[in-house]
Amino acid sequence: MLDAVTPIRTTPMPEEMRVLLHAYPRDAWKAHPGFAAKTQAWLNAHQMFRDLGEVIEADAQTYLDRDIGPDDFAARLSRFGGALVRNLHGHHGWEDRSYFPELEAAEPRFARGLELLEADHAALDQVLDGFTRASNRVIQLVHLDEAQAFDETPQVLAHARTIRAFLDRHLGDEEDLAVPIILHHRLRG
Image 1 (cartoon, rainbow, N blue to C red):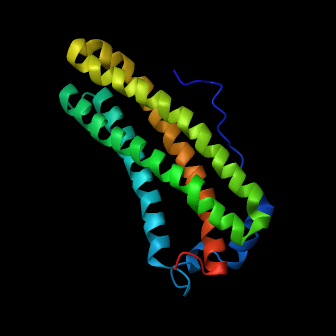
Image 2: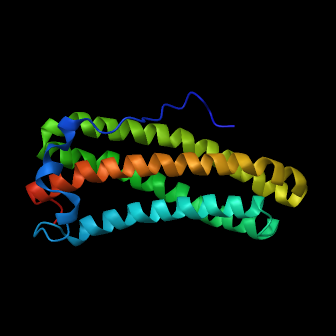
C-alpha cells in the first residue's frame, strides 16, 4: 500500500503567496504581453503530466474491470508510467536547480512559496518511487502470475490516484505562484 509517512502537503498555497495572482489572474495570462512561448511550453508540460496521470489511472481501472488484457495493460503501464516518472523527475530537477532560483531572485518575497514547492518535489519523489516499485512488480507479474498481477493492480491504481491528486494541487499552486512572477517581471521572454 501507500507509504503513510510520505509528507504530502494538502493545504493550499498561503494567501500572502497569491498577491501577484490577484494582479495577474489566470484568465488574463495568455493575453498579457509578457506571456512568452517558454511559459506556454512550461504550462504544456504540466498538462502533459496531468494527462499521463489520467491515462495511468484509467488504464489500471480498465484492467481491473477486465476491459483490457494483461499484456496490453503491462505495455501501457510501462510506457506511460515510465514517461510520467522520467519526465517529472527531469522537470522538477530543472525547476529546483534553475527555474525556482530565477523566480526567487526576481521576487524574493515569494521565497517561502518556492520552498513549499521544492518540498512538494521531495515528497513527490517518494510517491513516484512507490508507484514505480508497485508498477514494476505488476508488469513482471503479468508474465509470471497474471492472477497475482491482477490482485496487486489496486496498489498501482491507488498510487496513480495519489499522483493525480498531488499533481492537481501542486501544479496549480506552482502555476499560480510562478506565472504571475514571470508576467510581473517580464521573465523568460
